[in-house]
Length: 81
Image (cartoon, rainbow, N blue to C red; front, side, top):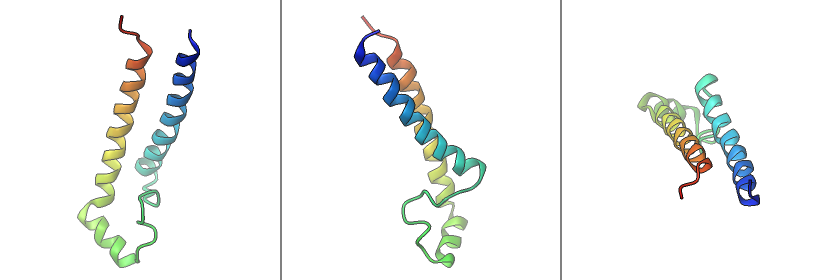
């Protein structure tokens, strides 16, 4: 195993843990504080955004991003000649 492959595994694992952890928190505990600027908005505006489905859409986007990152990580482990 080359040095580049070891660095790839370490960096991708770290990235997957961070992105996957944030996605897990958003799905499991409905923590939307990770969305940029959502926690700084007034409560009325947060409620309006929640009714419009904005946090749920960002949560779904995070899930898709995590899945694509995982597929890229697994695909990068196999070398193509």
